[in-house]
Image 1 (cartoon, rainbow, N blue to C red):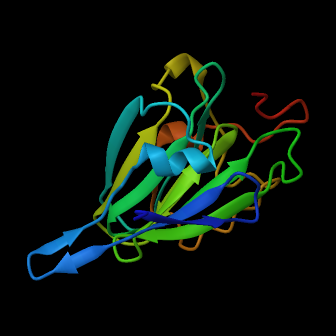
Image 2: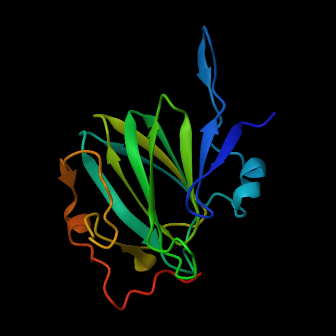
Length: 186
C-alpha cells in the first residue's frame, strides 16, 4: 500500500504529496518519508540531513534559501504543527518555468508535504502561531554553498498571504535578482 498520493504542480518537477493518515482511538500515524515511493518523483539519494524548525509567531517568513552545486539539494518539507504558506521558486535557467513560483498551504490538518528538487529556492510564511516544520534534505548544509533571494523581489512578485510579522536580518539583506543572475545550473 502506498503511503503517499503524489500530485503535479504547474512547475515541472515540483510535486506536492498527500500523506495517508491513519487514526483511531489511540491517535494517528502517517509516514513522512519513504525512499521507495519518492524515487518515482526524483528523490534518488539517501537523506543526508533532517532539520526541525520552530516559528513562534504568525506571519513570520523564512527564506528564500537554496544551495548551489555540489551541495544542491532535494527537500521534502512537512508542517507537523500549525500551518504555513510554502513557496518554491524555479531557478533552473533551462526550465520553461524559470523564475516562476508555486505556493501551497501545508498544515498539520491537511497532511501534505512539498517535494522541492534541486534548482529551486524555498521559503515559507507561518499562517498560525507555534509552527513546527520537518525538512528532509538530500545534501548536508554547506554555508559556503548557501544562497538566497529577497522575499519581496519585484521580479518574483510572490504573493505572501499575511503581513510580515518577523523576518531575520540575514533574510532582509538577501539580494534581489540582478541582471547578471543566471539561475542555478545543475
